[in-house]
Amino acid sequence: MSFLNLSSEIAKTFAFTYRNVTMTKRNVFLLGDMLYWPFIAVLSIGFMLAYLQIGTRDAAVVLSGVVAMSVLQPCQLDVSYVLLFDMWSKSMKHTLVAPVGRRHYIVGAWLFGMFRGTVTFMALVALIRWLFKFDILQAGIGPTIVFLSGLFLSGLFIGLLIIILLYSFGMRAEIAAWSIVSVLMIVCGIYYPVEILPPAARMLGQAIPLTWFLDAFRQAFGLRGHEHAALKGYALSAVYMAGLYMLVMLSEKRARRRGTILKMSE
Amino acid sequence: MAEFAVQAQDVFKSYPTGFLGLKRKPVLNGVSLCVPRGTIYGILGPNGTGKTTLLSLIANLTYPDSGTIKIFGRDVRRNPEFVKRSINICSGNPNFLWSMSVAENLTYYAMLYGYLGREKRRRVERVIDLMELKAFRNTTFDSLSTGTKQRLALAKALLSDPALLFLDEPTIGLDPDMAIKMRRIIRQVHEEQGMTILLTSHYMKEVEETCARVAFLRGGELAAEGTPDELKEQVSFKVKDPTLEDVFLELIQ
Image (cartoon, one colour):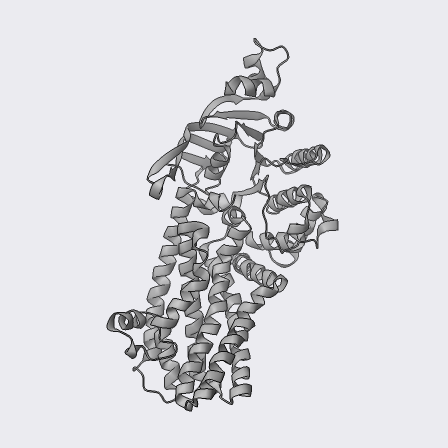
């Protein structure tokens, strides 16, 4: 790849990062995704744990789940915003006639999603340590990095799923951007191991990478879990990445053929 | 070098409609046209006759049911990257990110076209100067007047120096003085850069003043095509000193 091509690739990718950064700066409510709801979740559940006088290991299970959901949401929303901003502003055709590909808009938006997720994570770690005297980082640097990478990958997958739904159903699918994470709360066992779920739900949970990343992180606090949980999470992630990218491509082509792209630009 | 900027051959397009999209609503029925390189080419027709769909097909934003479309000799379906590098669009109902300023919107689009650093700034400043947007550079899109939004839309379309520019009703809803200004700028960039421009409009005078050739669409079909003088000649036996408006009225009957 020549220097000019590399520079052009960087420009096209960071265009979407730049757009998400600028839109977030201008909208205080978008900051709510990052801090307001995560703080509400940690405070309400943290005080409940204090009241119930739950031991450190069980608290680790629940708090790691709260942190997971809180980091996941802004990260997946940033990936979803890449299409939602175009739909809300009815400017989709301007983006799609530009010489950018799916890799640019997905990676560009995801980069800012990871940044927002990291800020949320750091803020929650500090809040939990200060208020509830519990240090999430005692899991160690390695497990924490694996956990965060798993959360960011999961955020990417949810974002891609929402992009597929938006291409397929237009604005009717907008609500999915805020509701899919809630479904994951149940099947991925964010507050409990998936083993306590009914068999069908357990199987579904075990087919989702997030379940394995949560399992691996909890093992760092001395809880029993599955062998090679993180590896299973990464292996499943590779499958999800390939499958979802293919589906994004197919749904975009279908949206062009059916005129959905034009409808979303009018 | 291809003689034509656009060649459309027997293009049919319909959209799914009704319950589960099982029915099809035809929009274009076998349209064929050739747009010579370097001309301003007008596409006219009543509302809902397929003008915007035709532009969208050429821009590869939607796909034809059948038929082929080439730009600069290359099939648009087989060369999507070439199409994207060659074209840009300006729509009469400009929509951009509401919370971003004029300069931020232009910066974003300059980056989408692969420009970074000094080159990005040069291009953004050039179109800001050309479209006289300096006073609005820090104004957010939702605070702009209709005329300024249109100028921003044209500025964005000129950022990439496209070889083929689509102007979809670029002066709709503008005050007469602003519309005159926009036409002057369109002619100016056409003369300076020699780009091919595809223009749709409801204003016959605008088309007569700016377009070298004109195509009339009626019911999704090509009803007539030629230079404004050739088209006026067709109705001269009915109307003395006909205008394009007379041609339009004659053709839609």
